[in-house]
Length: 180
Image (cartoon, rainbow, N blue to C red):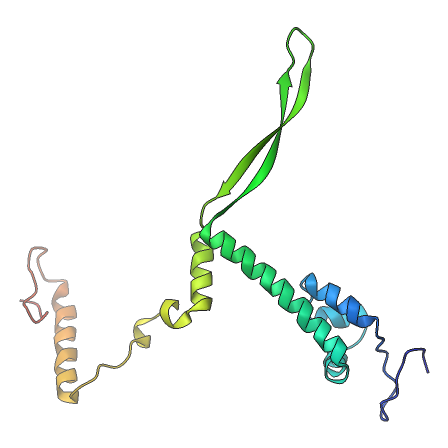
């Protein structure tokens, strides 16, 4: 039996070692997924799942690493969504004068990044999907009320659509929304 291997009473001995906890944590901090962990440890994905069930410290290391990595990405997405700034340095070449050549100079400045609309949309759709998700016409809730009234509204809507091409631009709908 290999050093550090433990017999579980069935099957072959595990290849799990306590030092895998620290390695899994570091890999997850870098964004590793369970399939990538399996490849790194040279085991099947099922083995990673089994180790997570059997070794609490291994499972906790993976959870901690993934939580920190996910938090960092969420913070970066949030900063991108609302806009941010950071200190930066521009390296320039300046003439010394008098035929003396040039010198390299570092010029500090504040680099600003405006809010990113795509990041805003992504953030809002994931944080409050009931308010910000994309909706199609089929997602609209059915109208409440009397079925006969609903049928009348549908007939009016169909008539409006059928006559829309024939209406003049100046023609206005009547007060009930039907075409004139």
